[in-house]
Length: 130
Image 1 (cartoon, one colour):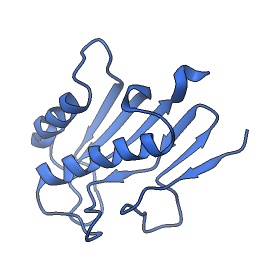
Image 2 (cartoon, one colour):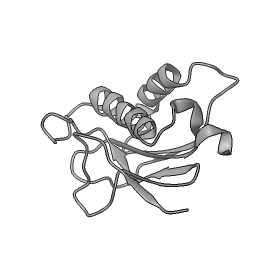
Image 3 (cartoon, one colour):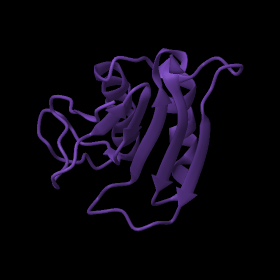
């Protein structure tokens, strides 16, 4: 199976890497920040950054041919642990069913570029791995 790069409009990395990569049923994203797709800039507030990061995650997995139900694992990086509650709000919007949520690990207090307050990545298995 050949690897395929996944890109979405309005979200480009500064480095020569795709938003995600797919081989067969597996999709692995790169770092997903809350970059505004209209301006290409990172907004100042955690609420907007987090909402945009989760929206980008949804668009990436859908562009790859899946849905958020195919996401198996999410990793989140936060500058400030107090922002976990904002992540949890977006998390519950995207994954409301407690019986069907991906695994998640959140790292706090890490250095993120510029004014980035949150960044995430995911692993998805599309079509039930078929």
